[in-house]
Length: 284
Image (cartoon, rainbow, N blue to C red; front, side, top):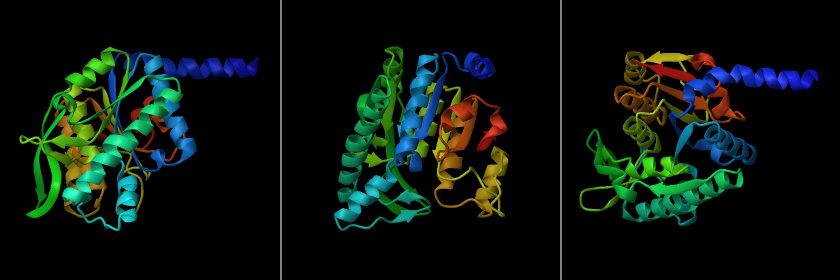
């Protein structure tokens, strides 16, 4: 009986969070170790399906960097990065489309459905979801890497309204119809803003944003984020994560959070606890 009472107590503690999130869109960037570890994959899928069952509307935007790198390596090609962005020539873009828009997207859709959910996959080219222009960094040519100029979330809204969990691969299309590789964090931030989501959550392979002494920073303002980037405390792949959070907040997203995806049931732990309880919370 005590065990049953404990279960009831846990459900009652979660009730305020369920009420706050009911009928709200939550955009989750899915990537890193959470995509490759079997136990983490299973817990992630169960979390997402549970959210949909209790009336939350999860939208997934996935990465696939390790899978792209592995495929390129098998083909005898090496990846080059500038500030966390993969330099993408025409041949690399073919691999990106094959891996992200095909293999990885379909695997995630099937993962959600095996857990009892209903999922549908998209790329940014479907329904004009992600429009882009060619992106460069400090004059460096990144090839077919896109900077998002416009988001039309119509196909995603239609999927949500039909009861599906949308799964979006970060591939955009320019004005000439040419596909471009888009950073998954940037895609998640832009889509989150377009959907006016209640929350944007980025799953990472570290605790969150770390200070110069490698200590977790539980909360940051936009101004503090920019200062950490400028002074070099934050570098590499964390830069686009912070930039996409800033973009989402300025676009009307209520809360953004960088969360350690190596923790079992990280999604539920984040959503059903106080905002500063896990990872790094970013506020305006």
